[in-house]
View 1 (tube, rainbow, N blue to C red):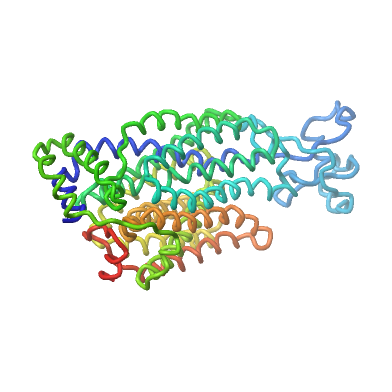
View 2 (cartoon, rainbow, N blue to C red; view 1 turned 30 degrees about the horizontal axis):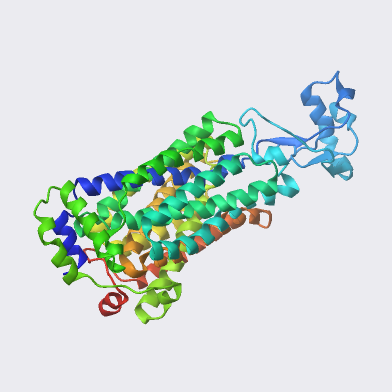
Length: 520
C-alpha cells in the first residue's frame, strides 16, 4: 500500500488540508513583497547635476538656472548626468545656440539634486547610485537573487535531510532578522550583504511551502491546491504596490514588508510536518501521529484502528540522497536538465517584465498593481487549462507566449502607450501562468525522496535567471531594444525544451527514483 492510499483513508482533502494550505499562504503572501521590492527600493527619480555657487543666481527663476547650467536632450528635457563647465548666459536669449557649446559639457562635479515629489528616499538617492554608478543600483537586485540562488542549494538539501517544517522555521527567523538589519543599513556595502542574506533566508520559504502543501493533498485536489493558494503571491504583489505608495522612505519600506514574518512564525506552530517525507525516512511513529491528526480533523474515526498495520506494510524507506542523484539515472537526468532550462527561462522572463514597470503609459504604482491583478485570472485560467490539456503543453506555451509578447512590444512604437500596456499586461499574465504551472509540474515530476533536492536545483536555476535579469537592462546602452530581444529569445527557447518532459496529469506522485525510471 502506498502513501496515496493512506492519504485517501485519512481524508485526501478535508479540514486538515484546508487549514494547512491557509497557513502556508502566509509565506506566499510575504515573498513577492521582497522579490519585487527592487522596483521601489532602488527607484531612480528625475535628477540633475547639483549646480555650484547657486547663490549667484538668486535673481533667476529655477527654469532659467537649469537652462544656463544643464544641457538639454533632443526632446527638450534636461540631462541627468551632465552640466556646463561654465554658465551659458547667452542661452537666455537664444537656447538654440546650445549645440555650439557642446565642448563645454562635463559630468556632474558636486553630486545631484533629486526630485523628492514621489520618493522621500531610495537607495539611489541615499548613495547617489545614478549615472556612472547606475550599475551598482541594478546590482542590488542581483545580490538579492544571488542569495536566493545559494539558499536554493542549501535549503533544498537540508529540508530533504532534516524535514520541511524545521527548515521553514529557520527560514522565517533568518528572514526576519536579516530583513530588519537591512532596513537599518548605513552603507551600500552593508545593504548589499544583508539583502544577499535576506534572499538566502527567503529562499527557504519559496522552496518548502509548495511541496509541503502538495504532499498532504490527494491527486484529485492537487491542481486546485497548488494553483489557488498561489493566488496569495498575486495578492502580496498587489499589496506591495499599496505599501510602496504609502511608505516612500526605503528604510521604513523594508521594515514594513519584513514585519509579516512575525505572524508567519506564530502560524508555523499549527503547520504539520510532511507525513510523506516522514514515511520515506522511516519515521513511522511521527508519521502515524500526523496521519491520525489528519484523520481526526477530517472525521475519519476508523482510521486510527488500522493505520499501524497499513503503514508498516506500505512504507518504503528512503536513503540519503544528494543533488548528484538527480543526474545518475537516464530518465531523471533528462527531466532535471530540461527542468533546469525551463526554470531559468521562467524566472528570467518573469523578473525581466516585473522589474520594468515604466514606459507602458501607467504610473509605477498602478503598473505594479495591475501586474499583480492580472496574475489572478491567469492562475484561474491555468487551473482549467492544466486539467484539460495537461501540464506539459500548458507550461510550454505559457512561457513561449510570454516571450512573444515581449518581442511584440519591441516593434510597437512608444507613441502607442495603450497598445503597449495591453501587450505588456498580457505578457505578464502568461509569465505568471508559466511560473504557477512550474511549481505544480516540478513537484509532480520529482520523487518524494528527492523532491526538495530537485526543487532546490530548479530554484537555483530560477534564481540564476532572476539574478541575471536586472543586469540585462544595462544592455540598452548597446542597443535600446536589446534587453527585450534577449528576454524574448530566452523565453521562447526555454519554453521549447518543456516538450521533452513527460506528462503528469492524473499521475500519482512518485516516491522513489525507481518509480521515475519505470514510468519513463
